[in-house]
Image (tube, rainbow, N blue to C red; front, side):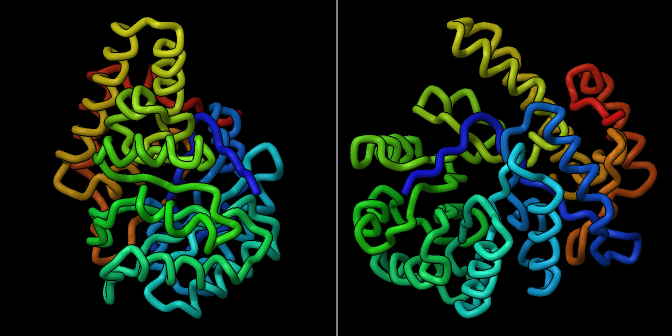
Length: 308
C-alpha cells in the first residue's frame, strides 16, 4: 500500500462561530481557497485544527464536510489521534467510510507509550480500524512529550501495521528524519512538519510537507521550493527568511501562533472565527498590529489570493 503526498499540505484551522461552535459552512470556500492557491492536500483536525479541543461528533462532522468539499483535487488526511483508543478507532473507521485519502494519529499524550514497542501497539490498534486506509504516524514531541526515535518505530511497525505508509514528522531531529526517509529503501512517505525549516527539510530529503502557514502563505513556499529545485540557493534562502519573519510576527503578537494565524485568515477572505479555550484570540489592537507588521514585510503581496 502506497500513498504519497507531494508539495504543500495545509493543516486547516477549524472554522468557528463567534460562540466557538463549529462553522461547517466555511469549509467549501476554504477548500476552494486552498486548491486555487496551489495546496496539494489538507490535513484536518490536527494541531492547527484544534482537534483535541473538539468533541468526537464535531470531528466526525468536520472530516465529512472536508471530504465532501475537497473532492479528488484536494485529498484529505484526517487526524484521528486521541487519548482514548476506542474514540481513535471510531474516528479511523469513519474516515474510511467517508472516503478520506488517509488517516494520521499522534501518540497519546496523557498516559504515554514508554517504549517503541508500546507505541507500535497503540498505532496498530488505531490503524486496524480501517484495514484498507493508508496510515501515517504523527510525530510531534512538542505536544505529546513522546520523543521515541521514529526510524526505530518504522523498523518495528513495518510488518505489524500493513497500512503504514509514512509519518507526519513535526520535529527538528534531522538525523532521525533522514533515517526515516531512507528506511526500507525509501518505502515510507515522511512528510515534513516545520514550516520555518522547510528548506532544511527539503535538503534532508523531504518531498511533501504539512504546515499551518501553508493555509495563508502557500505561494511564497512554492517559490522557495522552485528556487531550491532550480539550484538557486540564494533565492530559496531569502524566501525562507521572509517566511521566518512572518512566523515571528505571529509568534510575537501576545497570543499563540495558532490564534494569530487563525485570525489573519479573515484578512484573506476566509473567516475562521475564534480559537477555543484555553487559547485566546487576539484583540482589536493586536489585530491592527498584526496587519501592520505583516504589511511591512510584504505579506499581502506573497500571501494566498482570496477566492473570486
